Image (cartoon, rainbow, N blue to C red):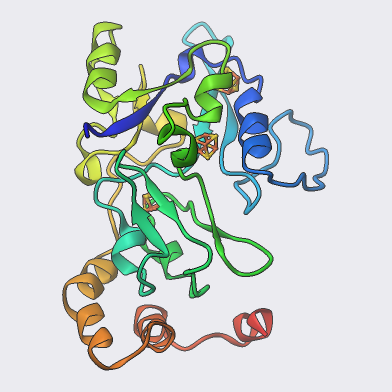
Length: 253
Ligand code: SF4
Ligand code: SF4
Ligand code: SF4
């Protein structure tokens, strides 16, 4: 099956956050209490119960006018996914036939190593210490439905389809460079930017941390030879981050 992706176009986005709500509805994610920070951007970050967030970026035009950029923050469904690379629990994170990176909470052991492996700070943990993030609606797309966020977006700022066709479409629309076209073996969330990625709050060159690459190549297979998933995770955690700090130990208790 040809790899599928989302094409996100901030220039088309009106910041209505219909996509945020649709995602919560489809995934039965509860609302969480937030505080008024003097902005309509809400919540201030991804949470275990918010897989897609619209960031409101205020910038200035050359004529000193305000320019708003609305950018969807979510899992990027990396072709080379640091989260899958470092995860010591088989099946907790997996690649779907559409090319998305999905998860199985039943198999997640709550080690949080995927946080260290992700170049985009995406994975979050729910109240049972299980991974939570966008799964590209593989439960819908496998049935021929659009992802809930893409289906809901009234302006076409989130489009879903064959990845190559989306890249071709963005280029035809005049976007010279599509963010995510080649990085990390190609992202499954592509962005049509007219300005450098930095303006949209994105890293110019996202990369998996070297320690994760090392683990994947050398130590993870060794850890599996004689250790179960939870023990391997503890060893991996120790070598990747060092001993747990007091507060971290307390929080985990
Ligand atoms: S963005 Fe992070 S969580 Fe999503 S696939 Fe890439 S490494 Fe994994
Ligand atoms: S693809 Fe599905 S899970 Fe991902 S942000 Fe959109 S609605 Fe949420
Ligand atoms: S639904 Fe579409 S227009 Fe509305 S915030 Fe989401 S991406 Fe933007």
